[in-house]
Picture (cartoon, rainbow, N blue to C red):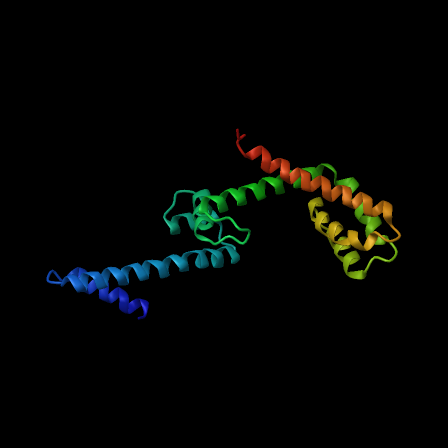
Length: 194
């Protein structure tokens, strides 16, 4: 039964003081189905709004919450996890952990921008590097954010190993260091256990 029809059915039963027990049960069933359908639409609408540039602050009043943080938290609780978190709170925590890791890496990349750009310049000029990898590194070199270099460098590394061992080792060290920064940032957010 279409949503509009279920809504009309519920409204008619609510307005009917003589509704039978069966009508009331049917209306409650229809209401539950409507609630499930609406609940499924909410994260889709939020995703569409975010994809079109709507800020969390603008979404908050539409969602009936007081802040941008509450709007994002609601979305994360409703949205299924792509990374395996079972609960809504787990999704919120995982998103915050990812952001903490990203901030730690971005800060390190800014502080080490010169070294990263030097390394990226050497990698993009390395003989034998496939043109796609070299192009990604070169494009990232043009970005103001030095952390944009990290992913292209890591992707180029397997192509460097034969004939450019020193460069490959430097890129691997940077990748290992940024992975450690992410883990440490997440670890510092978690309360100690024991």
